Image (cartoon, rainbow over all chains, first blue to last red; front, side, top):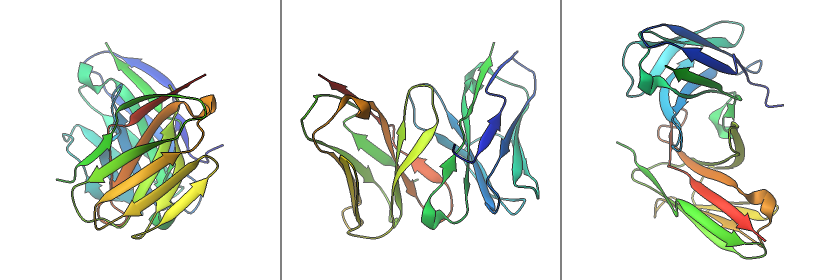
Length: 112
Length: 111
């Protein structure tokens, strides 16, 4: 058990729709990051939250947004879905990066 | 822009053989991570390397970090089939900021 849980496991959406993905981090893990992993590629950083504030963002458009809550849960929201948004979305949490990051099992999003 | 390059991208090796995966990165960083990913699964943390000269070993895998050369290696000793997976290195550019991943090395260990 990784201690980081994501829901749902799989999701199919239609182009143009909106989606919310959820992540529950380990207690005490103040940092949560979201990554997009296309098939056959390495994960790409979307954004990171520290104590409920966004403190870093990768090269993703504003239609990718997020929230982090006091109970160590977080959300990734994607508006106006495009076919290229089809990917595995991973959240990762960390107590301190000295110890590394723990990844959740991911949400497989398919946009049709 | 921080770039992380792994080679080889694909590796087929026989059981019992040794091999090394290389990870080069383009800018100064003192933190490097190795992850394993099985098909359709998430990322499993293997090693966290935090300083120049760091060496860590777990079972048949050993990782090292040379920050001056901006190079990390993952050495596989006497490979077994269970090691078949994709291995990623990732660099933490600003000590607590985003991880920049390589493209991964897909390893297949055959009898």
